[in-house]
Each structure stands twice: as structure tokens, then as C-alpha cells.
Image (cartoon, helix red, strand yellow):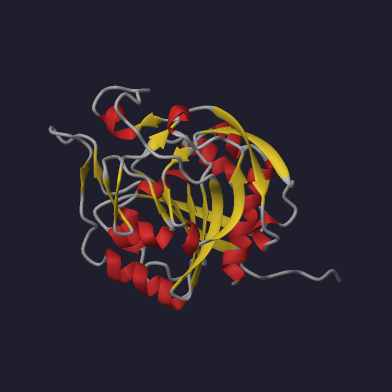
Amino acid sequence: MPTVDYRSPIQCLAAVRGHPFDRNGFAALFEGMEGIAVTMVDQPAAARLMNPEGMAGFDVLILYDMPGLDFDAPDNPPHYVDPPDGLREGLTALCEQGTGILALHHALAGWPAWPGYGEMLGGRFFYHPGEWLGQQVLDSGYAHEVDYELEVVADHPVTHGVSPRFAVTDEPYLAEIDEAGVTPLLRSSHSYTRDNFYSADLAVRGSMYSREGWDHPAGSNLACWTKKVGNSDLVYLQPGDSPQVFQQPDYRRLVENAIRWLASS
């Protein structure tokens, strides 16, 4: 008789909402990943599950959300909203027990009123000027539908089988990254200078695609990294805005590799 594998699939909880996204395209990203099951939960309900009790039965936490921002505030939106009671303690407890975390794209802007959240991820996208690792910084930059290449810079389980260099069309960020505190996995060919991005703060004030008076210094081209958070491994992958990138074979391989590595590490 043939051997039957009765092992349960890797169970992932994916937190979503807070930023517009293609729900069907995001769900399709995980199709064909044998032995991986992804359950999407919208914020704010997802925040209530980010603790050992809520994540019981799940192996990996996927962050594709952008919580803690009120874009409907009447004055100088978005306003920064404090995390709900228990989230700081719950996430800390998850990291202490070793639950793997995969953060994608706009998750880098989540919970801006909680500095420790950005430090946990290894980077921060700022909608307004703020403070990063003790230094005052300007608001971050964005650029839509940019053609660039990603280059693998480390031999790691997350990059196993991924093309050494591959093209994507997506939204890069000129954001703050703690290069000294993370392990680089991929770098971007895009030029991370002020003239290739637009000001997030000007955009939310009504001036889309503007950089007038915004003198942001050049930033890091790091597009994927891993780091240790407590007893947990965390992977951040910066691309992830468009349905096109969800269909890119190397991107899909990166996501699948990250999930399998995080579930087993």
C-alpha cells in the first residue's frame, strides 16, 4: 500500500486591512503552495488573535495589514492610533514562544504610535516626519508601478531556488531600515534617492506625486531581510503591492520558502 502523509498543513494566520489591496490576488498568491493553508482575518479582529491563545493551532503569523492609522481624521491625517489593550503583551508573548512572523509590503507602516513595532520589523514607513532609533527623520517616500530588479545577496532557506536576479513591477519605499540590526537577503536595483520617490506626507495632504520642499536623504535598497525577535524568526519582504508581483514565480517562491522556514525554525 502507498504511504499516506497524515501530517496537517502549515497553518498561517494572515492579518489584512488598513491599506487597499486586491483580496483575490493576495489569496491567489498562496494557491498551489502544497501543504500550506492561509486564513485571512481583517483588522481590528486580527489584533485580538495576536497572542499565544489566539494563535493556538497556527504556525506562522503573516502581516499584510496597516493598522493604527486614521485616514478620516479631520486635521492632518492620518492620525496615529494606539494599539488596543493587550496587543503589545500578546505579540511579545508570541515572539517569546517562537512563533514565526512574515511581514509583507505595507506592514512596514503599521502601528506608528508604537515605536517598538517598527523596531520589531526592522524598519518603518513614516506618513509624517517622526523619530527612528533616536533620530528625527522625514516622512517616507513611495513610487507606484516601478520596474526594477531584485538580487539575492545571501544563501538562505528563504532564497533557496530563487533566481539570482529577477524583475518585478511594484511600489518601492524610501523608508527607514535598521540595516545593522537585520540580515540582508535581497537588494533592489532601484535608486533610493529623493528624485525617484514622492512624499507620503504631501500625498495625504492632497498633493499626490509631489516632492516639493521634501529633501529626503538617500536610503537603503534593502528589499528583504530576516531578524531574530525574542525566540522568533521574522522575515520582511518589501514588494507586495500589485497582483502582478503576486504572480511572479520568484516572488511566490520567496513567500513559500519564508513560510516553510518560519514554520520549521
